[in-house]
Length: 137
Image 1 (cartoon, rainbow, N blue to C red):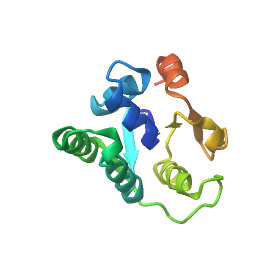
Image 2 (cartoon, one colour):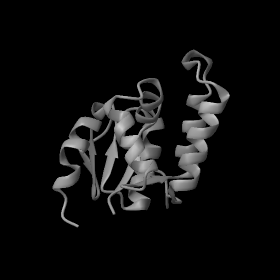
Image 3 (cartoon, rainbow, N blue to C red):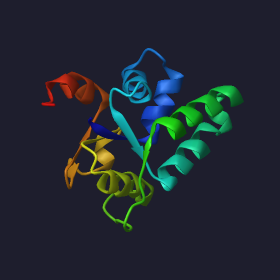
């Protein structure tokens, strides 16, 4: 199964625009078509950002999204800290991807990351969806 780390902006976009490309990626992850991977720090960021008042998500929506991630995710524990990204908060996603041996890190901001890290390709939701079924089993 393809392993994927989702940047927080993908999760937020999925909830803001349920018919958008990030939502399609998010639903594939929750539907077990792909394996979403999280670490404690990635999950904590999801929770903190989804609860920000500016997004105006209901408590039920946030709770349901977090429960789905918590229940469906492959949980990993990064071996160490990285300092790769211009914004150090983004390094947590590379740390998670490395620990999970993820195939992809899906983000709405690929310029915040290197084009790849170890065995992980950093891609947009559009690229990911266009190439998802081109993968050998």
